[in-house]
Image 1 (cartoon, rainbow, N blue to C red):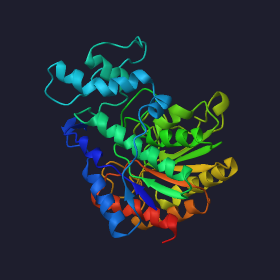
Image 2: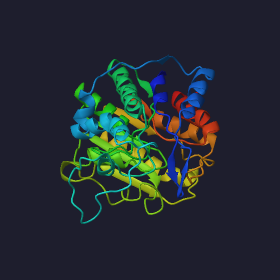
Image 3: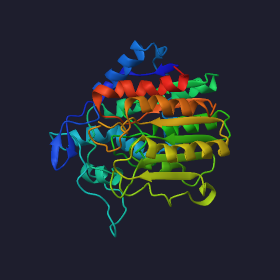
Image 4: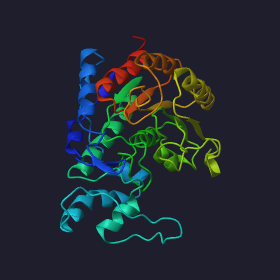
Length: 342
């Protein structure tokens, strides 16, 4: 299996994250990738190659162009305002407030941000562009006949909505890959999100469409981030009615409990009969992940990787979350090894 990876992810090296009322060192950090790359190498998973550059057109096809422009300019605007720390939103257009775009950087941050834990830093935009190119390059490998590929994306993407960032995400990498496949001739694509947290951004992008089936197994939003999306009764609108399927689970779910909706999702994918499958691969379902509360063990990732292979579809794995740093490489590659039957 080819892994697509860019060292440019290191350009995003945030020093602050708002968690538990404190500014702490971020859980989403560059060293996450080191553990995965090391494990890909040690297990001889396959070639690691750099991404191609697809420019901004694929991104602005999926994301609001003014939002993309904001991300490009945000760090410069923050510095021009004279602030010394990293750019963190402090005010939002909440209920019964005007949804008008401000001109000041403080207002712009809140206008385009869905969660305050994610700061914008020097290099964030460049790293997000590189991550998008990693995803698009993985999709292009499928277009060229590869049966599977691994887009080792950082920053992750599944929380990035049409015009909002948060949850460590800026561009929706899995969504970009899906749209690229459609642009190149696929009739239908399925995105299956197995991250601990709901892929609210992916849902937002495809909610009124029937050419992308979105399925997500995740922690119940009543208990966990992103809190305001991911309920089971959210099943799409307009042409997208029935093409958005959420499986929220409460904290403490073990592998057996997790497998029940997983198997249903596999059945739904088979019924949809997509031309390609994208896995939003978050391994923060691991029992020792520091910010998650499911109980999957390392060998469970091999098992469900094997089940995914039974769908017999061209499959792109797009990296999302996973924060138990010492185990993230093992668990990620276990899924890929399971998929390959190793």
